[in-house]
Amino acid sequence: MRERIEEESEKKSDALKALSKAQAETQLWRSKFETEGLGRIDELDAGRQKLSARLNEAEETIETLNQKVASTEKTKHRLETELEDLQLEYERVHAAAIITEKRGRNFDKVRFLSIILSIWGVTNTICKPKQIKTFGATKTKRDALLIIT
Image 1 (cartoon, rainbow, N blue to C red):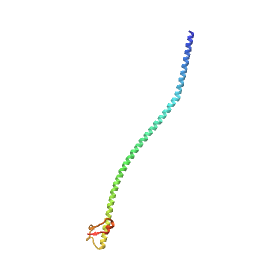
Image 2: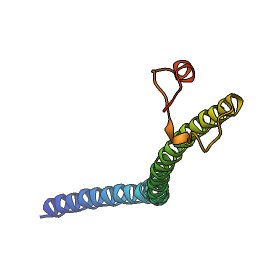
Image 3: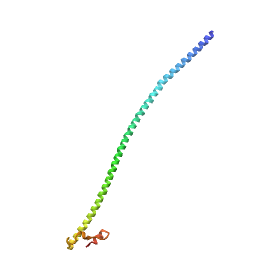
Image 4: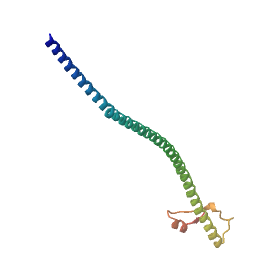
């Protein structure tokens, strides 16, 4: 029975050694986790916070740029409208200028004819400007082919 007690004692002592070794190893892993693992967790949290801050900045930048795009689109639309208005105004003024130029040429013709008529000794009572007709296609032919009716 002593042998058995000694064997049991040895088993107990081996088990206690294994337990002690396991507890030491557990303590080693716990301290390793606390130093390295928690440090790494802190690094990851800091990285996550940095990424979150950059994401927020990027979202704000996108929002600002979207507002600028909307503003630019409004300005573009306003400028397109102004351009259309200016084009219409130009066409109107250009047409008026052409009409005024034609009237000026006709006025010059009437004036020229009245000078010619006064040189010839004909007065306005005899020949009114409406009675003068021109024939021909070009200005030089018109000036040359004036006929009084």
